[in-house]
Image (tube, rainbow, N blue to C red; front, side, top):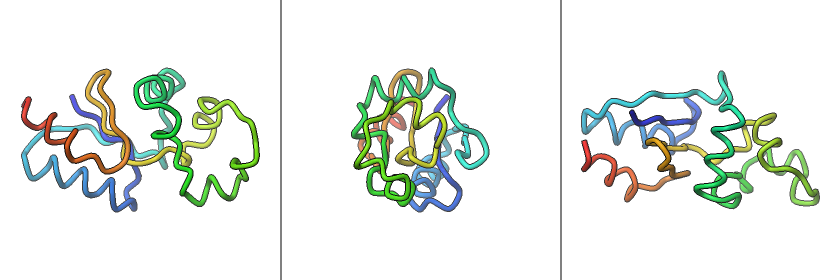
Amino acid sequence: MIQIYGRKKCKTTQKAERFFKERRIDYAFVNLDQKAPGRREIELFLDVLGEDEVLDTEGKAYQKRGLAYMDFDTAAELEEHPELIRTPIVRDGRRVSAGSNEAFWKELASER
């Protein structure tokens, strides 16, 4: 089953949800404001996509924490502060995308 990790107020997350709803494709929504992904999930995101895709360097949380000037363990930082994750993360098994990636969403939709 497709999983969408995001925030209810995030416009891009809303876009992903709308995309799958319009095509009547079932998905599970994980609200990052209520439930953070576990360490293994974060490591999967980082392994598949890489740090640059998963870590939201444009977000307020990144700026507020001053991470641009620090060395840090990305997985540990994302686990402790899920607000640093670029949303939405759309996952189908080991296949993952971050942010607005309609090509990936269409690929998933065509398989359903």
